[in-house]
Length: 223
Picture 1 (cartoon, helix red, strand yellow):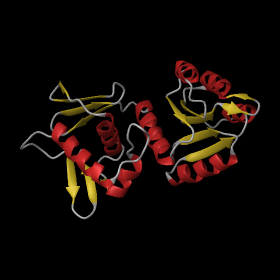
Picture 2 (cartoon, helix red, strand yellow):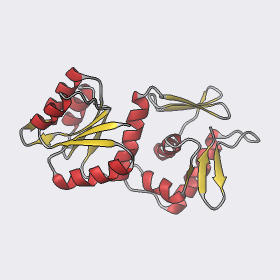
Picture 3 (cartoon, one colour):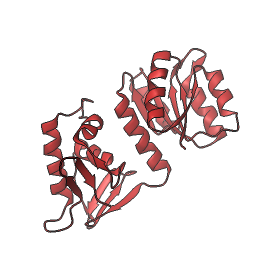
Picture 4 (spheres, one colour):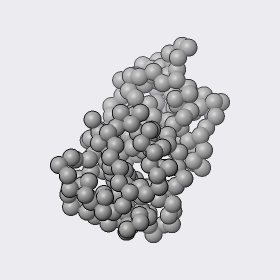
């Protein structure tokens, strides 16, 4: 079971994330201060991922990140209302895996968590039918060793499918996880267009279907 430590002093956010993450099957431990987080990190329990708010009552989330790095190699995602470039660069330079600015959508955060955990698990490269290769560390997709240019939204849609290989995803599930460059969820018509584009870019005419339509249910990534 994936274990997550949430370091957040806003109880409303904590309770919302607790419900959402536990529904996803994660084991969640919470801390509201730097001191509480350090205490949790010193227990025998090991965490796979840390979600850390930067602004804490007794210090900075950066302090928690530094302490965690000395204790192990858990993945780190910062949650913060501070969206200035300096804090972003500092957090990433400290080894953070991602950086999410408040207010954020739960579905977006869940998607980012899955992506970070996939990379940490060493599944950066995925081979798909038709000679398609996806390297999530480089954010690069190739078909028969030729680079396939994808838009940001096309790539995000592909990542959603990769997170659920072989599983039927309804249109509602896809719509809840795919968002455009402005952070807004796409509509049903836009989803249809982008699935068609993704197929055109990745599937070889006359070759195997990569994204199959399951009539009356949704879509499935063939693996």
